Every structure is written in C-alpha cells, then in structure tokens.
Image 1 (cartoon, rainbow, N blue to C red):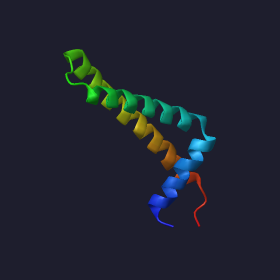
Image 2: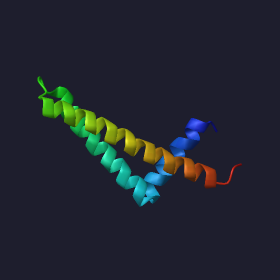
Image 3: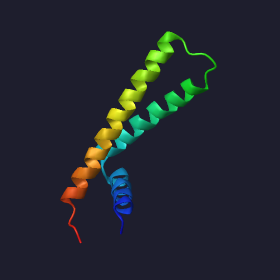
Image 4: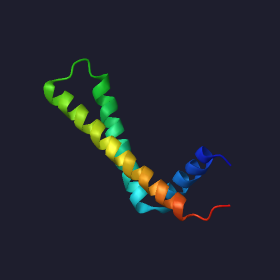
Length: 80
C-alpha cells in the first residue's frame, strides 16, 4: 500500500470517527465555499480582497491542523 493510499484511508477513518477532524473539515469547506463565491464576483472591493486573503490564511491553517491529526494517527497506528 502506498503512502498516499494509506493517508487517504486515515483521512476517511478520521472523517468517520473523529469529531475534531470533522469540525475542521466542515470549517475548511465553509472557507472554500466563500472563496469560491468571491472568485466569481466581477469586482472585489478592498474589504472583499482583505476577506479573501484572510480566508486563504484560515483555510491553510485548518488544513495544517487536519494534516497534523493525520500525522498523529499515522504515527500511533501499528505499522505492518
């Protein structure tokens, strides 16, 4: 099994069984949806641009937290 397949399985497991991972995934999805809305706007005000930058940073922070959970789970899982 490749590492990418293993981490995908870990992500699926965490999504099904870990409330913190689920919360982070939902938060990530909300940021993504709002960024998608902003990207479709024909014009962005300075407030919209600031929101876009802030959302990108928040989305990255949440993604990093999700990956930390995956890494902790990976390290604690028995290796075959």
